[in-house]
Length: 403
Image (cartoon, rainbow, N blue to C red; front, top):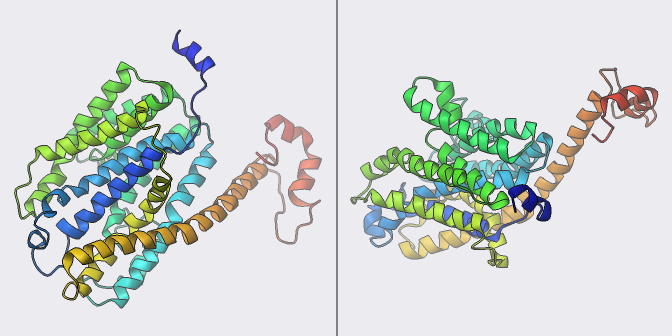
């Protein structure tokens, strides 16, 4: 039986929540949090290797959790947007990223202003710019250092939106992965071409590409071409992670074996291969959904607020107890943010954004004719009246009031 016949008998999988991915998300954020609390940053008042002599070494590789995030993101962006329109894609990205982010910017700014410590309060101009999530290209300091990765995610969404615009298919996503791989390689030879560097993201593109290749395996099955793409992205991703490893090593109290970087990234790819091939399909523990939900708020909130609390409590609470308490408190706060702020605001924004896109399509369907849409407009005026007086135009254009 060929692939076409298989597709007819077994329709492609539709969007669904994969519990194992929620677990991997939480693993990634836990790695990053431990890295910032145990192996990197300030606050403890003495060498971190002395405070946590056992945990310090493994926590020093926690920065690799971001690479796992990017790998998962490549998979999930296809999972959540397959078969949907560009407006659905844009809506899903806005409601996914901004509600928790806006809260994190405000709460981090407030904590830095109220708590004494080495981290200084942020300027109000910088805070306002951070709310746009465009502080990096605008040359404005981050309210919290972890926001750097959001700019990488935003660039991925920007270039992937071109594929979504044309409609996601196996061939188009595969072609996108191959073209992006070529651009990533080319950017190494042209380091002075800043636009290419910004869009190709040679440091991180391999993980997004690997995630998309795994999604194609999950949805359509494996083949040699996809495995070659996965293998290439793995090897290139290991090499692209070397500058970060060298920076971490330069600031480490111990010699960090470089082979561990390759081993950890390979383990990430193995876990994602397990997701793509269905090894974990029976894992459906309910708490994994909660773990996945708190991941994004926890990532946004933990770093600078955590450092401030460590700096103020380090002499009154045992370090191990303080570390454990911080993990529990920050996770609980992240759950509250997700439950009572992120989810309600996301639902409301999704409804309003969909109305905005429907309105845009309706206006465009009027073939450029003037229309009055205002708070005082009566139902028979404005859009409805125009639609009734121009049935031929609406029919010919193939666009209705609901898009």
